[in-house]
Amino acid sequence: MKKQIIVVASALVLSGCSVSSADNDKHVSTATPVSQKEIQSKGQVVFKDETPLEEIRKDGLTVVSDPHSITVVVNKERTLPEGYDPTDLVVPDVPFYFDEFLPKKQMREEAAKALEELFAAAFQAGEDLVAASGYRSYDRQKKIYERNVEVYGEEETNKFSAKPGTSEHQTGLAMDVTSAEMSFKLDQSFRETSEGEWLANHAHEYGFVIRYPQGKDDITGYTYEPWHLRYVGQEKSTEIHNQSLTLEEFFGFTP
Image (spheres, helix red, strand yellow):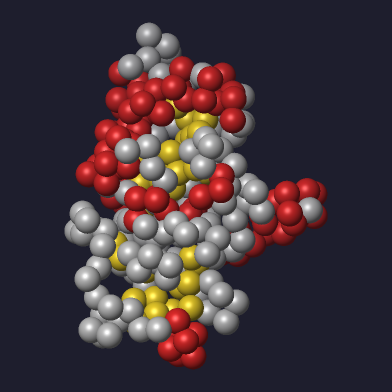
C-alpha cells in the first residue's frame, strides 16, 4: 500500500424536446413545446402547459433554470445565471497540493462530503489522490480564460477552457484531482497512473463522473480530462458510468 501524501446543469433540448430533472429517470417530457418562432420572439423556452423552463439570451446561450440542482448541465451552450454563486461552499477534508486557503479548495457541501468518501476509499485501495482545483468564481474564470486566449489563441483555448459563466467549476460541483506521480499537474497522462485508473473505475460509486471522457470531444466540446470529477449523485453517476455516457447524452442535450 502506498504511503498517504499530506501536502503542505430541469432542461430542454430544442431539437429533441427532451427534459430532465433529478427525479425524472426517463428524461422525457410529455409537454408540447411552442414553435421555434414563438420561442425566438419571446427569448424564452416555454411549454404550452406553462411549465417554466429556460431563458435564451440574445447571444444564443441558454440560461439554466435551476443552477442549484446537483444535476445542472453547464457547457458551451448552457450558462449559469448572471451573478450566480453557490451558497453552501465548504472545504472538503482531503489533501491538497497547497497549504493556504484559496477559494478553489471549496465545493458545495454535498459534493465535498462525497469527495471525502471517495478519497478515503482510494487511500484504502492504496491510491494517493491529491485535490487541485474546485470552485471558481465568474471573475476568476474570466481571468483564466482571457490569459489562455493570450497564450494559445481563442480557437485553441476553447478546446480546454470554459468562457466565464459556462464553467462547471463555478457550480461548486467539480474538482480537479491529481497525484504526486504527476507532480500535481493536470495532464491526460494521469489516466495511465494507478490513481487515474482507480478513478475511472470507481468514481461513480461515490457520485462522481469523469465529466469530459475520451473520444467525446464533439459532444462535450472539450478535450479529454481524466482529472475532472463532477458530482451528480450516486444514482445518476452509476447510470451514466454503466452506459458510458456524457452528461449531455444522459440528460438529452445532444443534437
